[in-house]
Length: 142
Image (cartoon, rainbow, N blue to C red; front, top):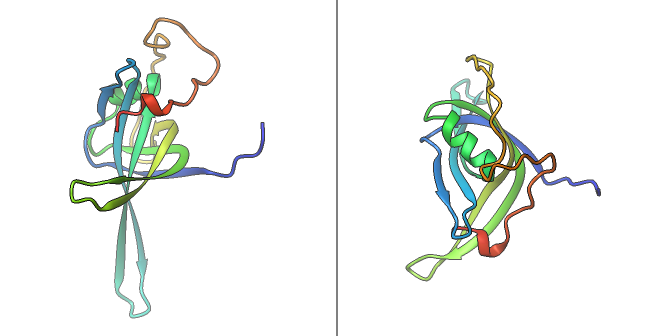
């Protein structure tokens, strides 16, 4: 496998409960909105703060496990690929969106405890050791 440099690790808090949906083909997809704060002291000695919000898309078993395990306010660690896409809104303007296609989502243990519980495998009842294939354009719900 070739070296892939489009990976990001993003740590922050969920702004809402994960939203779980299913595509027409039956694939589970969860959308999570994660906020991350950065604080620093400016040249004038005043405290500054900046918040970055990113949408995270999780697919299949990862989507179902995230929706069942996480809730608003939980601190999470997300590892995935940055994806930039565009669409035309109702006013005919092109809107650009930057989001993360998640490979891994985990609760942060910095200020919380978690008890991992092994899931029963894929929602179709088949356990798979290989990573699922990425969704096709026909399988994307947006």
